[in-house]
Structures are given as C-alpha cells and as structure tokens.
Length: 232
Image 1 (cartoon, rainbow, N blue to C red):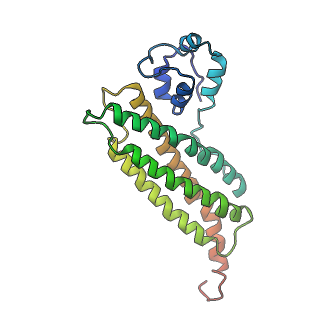
Image 2 (cartoon, one colour):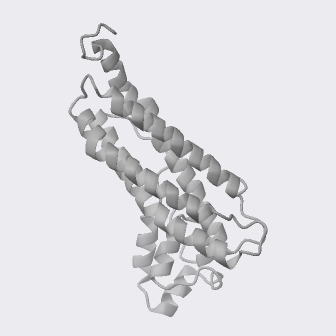
Image 3 (tube, rainbow, N blue to C red):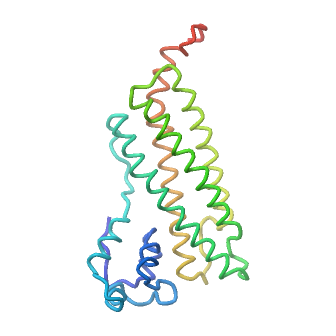
C-alpha cells in the first residue's frame, strides 16, 4: 500500500482512493469543482489537522493480496473483516455518488442511468446474504460443520451466482466501469469505487466458493447426508 501524499490534489485522491469521497464530504472538502488544490492546502484552508486527515485516508487502503488460509475460523474472521465490513461501508457512498451523477449529468448520453437503483438492489441482497452467513452458516463452520451444512452452503453458492450477475449488470450500465473523457471527479471517483467493489466481491466469493466451502462439503460427502438413506 502506498502512502498518502498530502501534496497531491484532492480530486486525484478522490478518484484513486475508493472511500475518500465520504471522508472529504464529511470534512466539507470540495473534491469535485475544487479538486485541483492539494490535500495540504485544502486541510489548511479548513483549519483541519492534516495528519489526522492523512491517517483517516490511509485507513481506507485495502490489501490486494489474498492471505494464507489458516484455519477455517481464521479465514472466516478475514472474510468478515476484509469483505463483509468493507461492502457495508462501500455501497452507501457508491449509491449516493451514483444518484448525484445521474442527476447532474442527466443530459449526457454516457450517464449510467439506473446505476443507483442497481446498487441499492445489490446492497439489499448482499446485506441479507452476509447476515445469513454471519448468523447461521459461519457459526456452523466454526463449530466444525455437520451433516446438513451442505444445504446452507448450496444456498450461499446460488446467491453468489446472483451477485455475479449483478456485477455484470453494473458493467453493462457503465461501459465496463470506464468513465467518459468528460467525466467530472465525482463520476471518476464513483467508477473507481465500483472497480474496487467488483474486485472485492469477486475475491470474496472466490475465498468462500473455492477455499472455505469445499473443506466442509468434502466432509459431508464422506459422511453421507446423515439421513440413513444410503446416498453415500
């Protein structure tokens, strides 16, 4: 992860660092029309503690490499902290920016019409999905699984497929998450955040589908379904 450069224009930081827009908005730092000034100057003009702002922005940087898997419980901890909590923070700001872009640039033919609604639908579905994992499936896996664990796993796999289709829909609305040449900083920051959401959700699904779940599905296959029907 790179250090935050306080001499960099805040508009550039907003575009390059997903989540920075929420920080700038809360601190009333204009990253769109006033995005040409440096972070240092912007913080100084508002009487803000520059180091505190830098520290808050630095906390938004996310590791891109996948971790060593460790135990199932350690992997679950990682999934919840690195992906579940990040998705919960990502989506409200992306929805807000999408609504802003659709309203301000409604006459532009490249405007991603329907994007905010698509993101709201994704937020609702993903929030429910993550709750089911945290409340039902993950506690079962932490306890070592059981003969019926393949059923909720199969449901989560099906919902993962739905999440993938939602990402494809967003890609279609946004020209594969590519902003037009005339896009403002808010528009570019929106698409930068969408790109991170896309990568995060793909990695999230990968860790569950291909690393976590197979460990317990294999045990279920070896033990049979537990019903005495002889299917094993």
